[in-house]
Picture 1: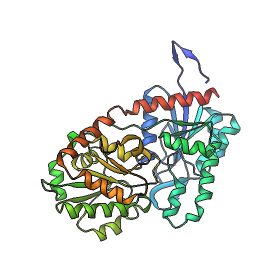
Picture 2: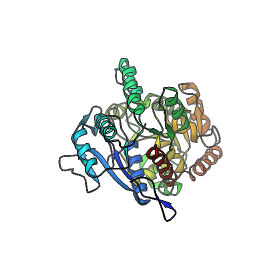
Picture 3: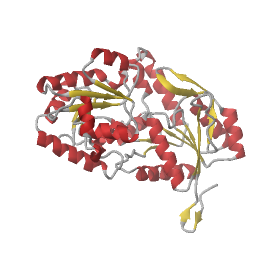
Picture 4: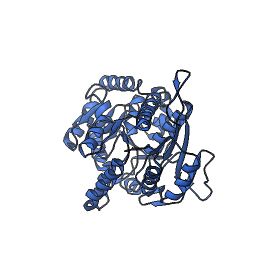
Length: 384
């Protein structure tokens, strides 16, 4: 299509998103891609999605091309897209997009990069997941250098790699990836809102007036550093005997956690307003993961008026101002993390102040701004 000015505004773009995960699948990447696709379409752009079939009866819609996939080990319900280079080449010869955006680095993403480059179509990519770091938590740490090299090689073959934080952009640029651009992440501050706090929900958790209710939201898996969540809550409960631990999410560690902690509340996967009510009804958010490229749950918690205890990494490094709207510890400093959690709960007025400040921090972080940033990088890549 090219870039032409029509009536003072730029022409619409035709963008093909290639992704292994997409709503209604429940994870941070699917949510982010869904938001971007919806926002670009609302802005008048034509967006198609190429993804693995999510079930035998899943054939997508007129805006989607579904391809074959295999189950992704350790991630029930997710599929690893198989290479589809020839099919994509036929599709793009018939209806040539202005840009191919590769979201995930699996075989499907690699085949999309190859097909687009052969056809001379500009390609951009996104860096969402530190799969190389995950390898350490699944007993294959020796593969980490190979996994990292695999990921970086794909991104070096695209015109721009879009990332959520400036810190990640600096890391990737330092590893020789050119064209790294910070696009950011947004949060739905209407959905994730302190007004959704529910005393009935707190009562169902067994939380009394004193509380506090400590919350974790996310995948229940080794790479999320859940041992520190457990250790933190034990320290909190020693000082606040009425404290209650609430877990939202599912994953390979769920069964073992429930067996070890019969006194904790396991809510399973929660979505939409129900998820928002869980955030707003808690008092403290424990999130000690060190494998995130961002961590949407940190932004959702803060928008809900829920103070966060996290390591100074990914989203928390950019959003949490220590002892102003939450607390952070240096990455890997467990004693500092535990002290931060206990400090937060040491004074009710302090906790309330931090909760209000967390909410105010997130109000400017709209998805509309993220969509506009994506569009700007896309046009830059198309222009060459």
